[in-house]
Image (tube, rainbow, N blue to C red; front, side):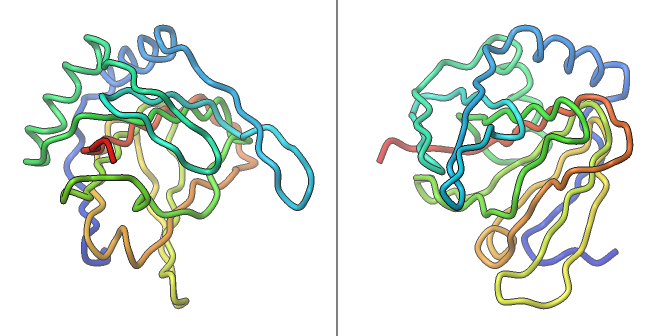
Length: 187
């Protein structure tokens, strides 16, 4: 499959057994946030759990995430992600999809202060979920099934010219944890 410029699917970062152990550890040790948001005048729960770690706070979709130091587990994982991608990261946004009903709508990861390095490395742990992409100006999109341990890098045109989503699925699936690594600055 031909991927758009700026999208790179790397070989799996973690073997299945290690990915499963890491998923269990991170789900247990993370103080998950549950939020609500208002759409068309109706307040609804966010269809996933989230947490941000890094030296700078982050505001998106009306939510403010304060700075929070990386845990030892995340520090060790960050080193592996940096080695695999050749990029430096100091922050990670964790999204926990508890089952197939949890999701993420269409969005772009280009709205944070990045100090000149707008790349995002996305590490998936747990259940395989469909990752959808569509060009901002219209046209054909594409889908990738991201397995546990997979590492996807988005940069350049993949961040500015494309949107992505993790849709709901009716098929029974277990939990999935997505870690989006970024380099953030305080601006």
